[in-house]
Image (cartoon, rainbow over all chains, first blue to last red; front, top):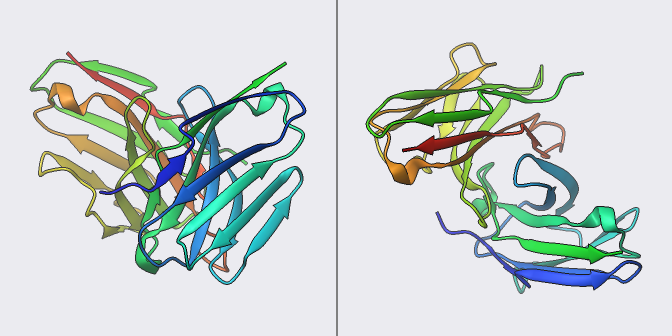
Length: 111
Length: 115
């Protein structure tokens, strides 16, 4: 199945800087979710934004959604070394409960 | 409570053999998902269950792959006549999918290596 696109593929920043990663998808959706993955194993849910929302905050995370452009962005403010991980967006394909994950952004935060 | 568990954590098998991968979801979660993830890629959807039935199996790559969830809890992903291209990490996730709650809780995965 087709995956969404994320960019950049990799991002390296200094601790304390902000990190922005983007996600584009192909179909209409009910919601979009962001996940973090450490060490290539289980993923952890970060935040969910619904199709009728434009922006959402959770701690140091800020997510935006533009359904007209079929895109979303995740901003991590004041990054920490512990934020080093891969970040994926996931969308429910055409409003079903079948979730399609993006290709991911590998974030490296340098101490 | 306990999270999603998967067994085994690692499985090495020879080409042509049959394997079963098990997933124990979070108690009370009606939805269960299987994904496959190759190195450097995002999780690829395989199948998801609502209760005992497969609600969408469109991601299963071919008829060598099959999954069951007979009692609406534990699920088993079965792969027949394994091929080297089946090598990947197989991830399981569960979700409530009710009351506006759609987040998925992932297990640690099973790393399958076909030699």
